[in-house]
Length: 255
Ligand SMILES: NC(=O)c1ccc[n+]([C@@H]2O[C@H](COP(=O)([O-])OP(=O)(O)OC[C@H]3O[C@@H](n4cnc5c(N)ncnc54)[C@H](OP(=O)(O)O)[C@@H]3O)[C@@H](O)[C@H]2O)c1
Image (cartoon, protein in one colour):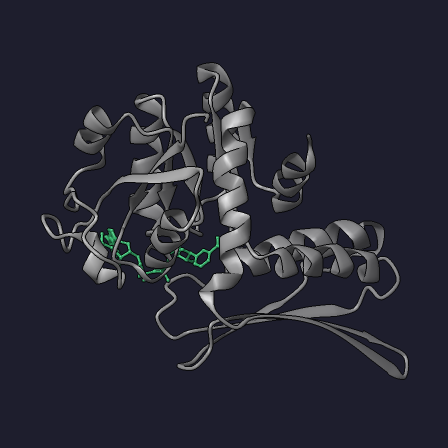
């Protein structure tokens, strides 16, 4: 049997990181070899995520953890300022970052791509690992070529720190590229933050006497897990940065 993929998770007690940890533990070909937490360092992650003891405790520092675990991949769902640091630490240890944290700029991503190519390492920074959200962007691009009057609404739980969402910003790029020649202004984005919401996006197109609404709802954080797991496997197979989930999913189809 081939060696399991060795994964470390940062910000381990966060909402997405807990889901990611459970997902990693449920894969037969992936191993959770450690995790970092600033708030619960020294505690066993197992009971925190509703599982039995994992046999190791949460580390206070990613660098020290990578020195001793021999990890292949770091999964990061934290804050932009923390993710930036974690990416740098991972790459300096020859470990490939898979980042879901939103709020990194395109300029930063371009720099990261260059750095990864120089190091011969792969990296993923993807603001939305949901397959449905990826398809929403594809369909919105197609619609925008015909209906250029469009606005985006993104709705999220009240604890989300960044606005607009990384997904809405990506959607705007897709839509604005499709409109291109006739574009009068960047497509407006409206942000809603309310308890009860998870992650929801609406793209509303208006034409004479008609409306077209494309919508996607992540009803639970489980919607991000199949894409995330595919990203963790795929990042071992390429050099440079990939941010497009469609590209990562295509890699999973190759024999
Ligand atoms: N790409 C996707 O598909 C996707 C899906 C959902 C969310 N996200 C993004 O993932 C990120 C995390 O979302 P979340 O809902 O899981 O957030 P969250 O529940 O607030 O978790 C973030 C965790 O990061 C850790 N952390 C480390 N340094 C921190 C600091 N200075 N301030 C705050 N937290 C710090 C904390 O865990 P410790 O105390 O254990 O270190 C915290 O619990 C956000 O950027 C969100 O937009 C992306």
